[in-house]
Structure formats: structure tokens, C-alpha cells
Image (cartoon, rainbow, N blue to C red):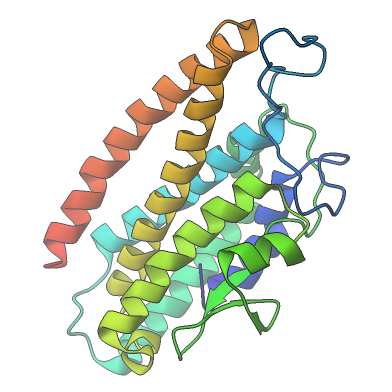
Length: 246
């Protein structure tokens, strides 16, 4: 994501998506264990994904829901600039309170013993429509090289940022920086849609490769439930888009 809410989300929630020991500053690290190879020992393969993988998906889906609500309830895009600015600030204040709320954290982490650290990629699309990471331009491959997050998380986060980059190119960086809350929230909803889709698709691929293992079967059940929740969110996303004339 980008702009004002990013720092709060990274500090208070997003950093909790990788548990202690799950990340060791290695560019090739994966959060999903390797599938078992035919004829190879089964030890260490097709084991249960670290709990942070599901926590990451829950976090992104929960944040997407917050932005869907904002897109549905925000004032018209034709509001005057001062009113737009106030509305955006009020929303970001509410967002800060939401992500600090203990109920929200339980929804995200459940019984996952995740530690708060800075391992999740911190991307931002600037006014020149460049994807930045820690103040430097970043391609997806470059982010994998420079980051310490799980490969799956970086791939998904970059898919989110691709949405912002495309919006920036279509509307212009200056116009995008002056978005109404409704347009800003709608763009974030689309970004989280791409990110969740990436995470769930990667989980499904892993589960299919591990379909004969108990943990693989469980992961496929989890993915089915996630797909059902995504369909519900998609209906609300379309309602928000229709309301905004998008």
C-alpha cells in the first residue's frame, strides 16, 4: 500500500506476519515447506506451513475489509479538497485505532506466536509511479534480493503494489496524491485483492503438491474456506465500485 496509512500498518500489524525463526535474512527463504519428492525421505517436506502464513492472509483480508467499508461509506468524490483531507485524516485515525485493537489482533494472529519485526516488505508507489522499497526503486526480483521476508510474502506484496503503479500511470501521480477517501480506499481494496489472491493461490499450489500428506489436505480445506470468504468480499467490493462509478 502507499501513503499515510503505510507506516502505521507496518509498525503495528504487518511486521507481525513473520514469526521468530521463520526469517533469517535469506533471499530464497520460503514460508511454505518444500513438497516431498518421489522416492525422497519425507522428513521436513509437506509439513504444516508456519502459522504466520495464515496470519498474513487473515491480516490482508481484514485490512481489505476495513477499506471496503471506507469505500462504501465515504463521501462523494466531488467533495471539496478541504473536506476530502479531513475525511482522509479521520479515516487514518480510525485505522490506527483498529489495528491497535486487541480484537483485531486476535482476528489476525489467533494463537500464532508471531513476533513484531520488520521483515515484511515496505513498498510504496511514489508520485513518479515508481515502486520504492526503503527509499530505493525496486523490481520484484530486486526486492527478493534485498529483502529478508519470505518469498511468498514479497511476491504478494509486489502484486499489491502493481495495482498502485497501474493506477498511478492511468490517473497521474499528482492526481492520485489528491484522491478522495472513496477513491483511495477503492484503490487499496483492489491492491489487497491482488495480494490475497497471490497468497491464497500459492497456498493452493502447495496444497495440491502435498495432497497426499495430512497437512496438505488441511491446507486445501483452509484454502477453500478462504476462497469462500474472498467471494463474500468480492461482492462488497463490486458494490463499492458501483457506488463510486468505477
